[in-house]
Image (cartoon, rainbow, N blue to C red; front, side):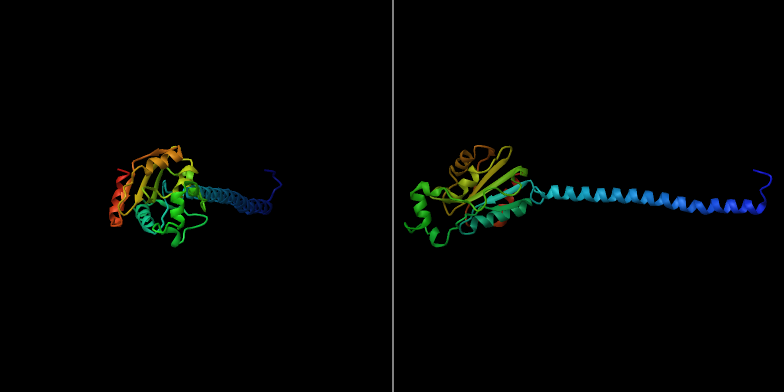
Amino acid sequence: MPASLDRRELVKILGGVLAALPVSNMLAGCSNNATAGSSAADSAGNSSESDAAASNSGNGSKTLVAFFSATGHTHAVAQAAADALDADLFEITLAAPYGNEDLDYNNPDSRVSKEHEDESLRTLELARTTPEHFENYDTVLLGYPIWWGISAWPTNDFASGNDFTGKRVVPFCTSASSPIGQSGSNSAELAGTGTWEEGTRFPSSTSADEVADWAVSLSQ
């Protein structure tokens, strides 16, 4: 330190140095906060992307219950199974839905009666063939009523129009008295892919608890 520097000048210099320190610290703090804020934003963005990806499998479920229902009974069974498994539900619907008169199988002139007599009429356009994110499901339960001893044909296009590769498929049907018969294996033949298991029939007297027990047993 030069000998000519007096006390007053020394105090002025030190004061300037000390005054400068908080500014430097503040700038450092802003830099750190900006980095932390950027990291938090990145984390939030990644979290949102992960949440979106998780929802792509249908609410995170690995099981889908797909069904066609004419009078509501198959729908009730499908709903009970989906509730028991916390599975996603997909209703197979027609682009031109059936009306009540169309479903009168006692009338030879009804739509289903004509489709039964003429197999070429059973190729029906679906409102939607493939459920959203279908590729993400491991297990598919496929439900339908039995018509004239076979599965209701609106499920034919669902079976033939989707890729079941790597999926476990479990058919189930509803009927007043008819057994499930070869309906499940017929659907498997139409699909050509997937591992299809033996199906189960539910009569009209089946309770929701009985359906739930069956559904839960599939994972045991």
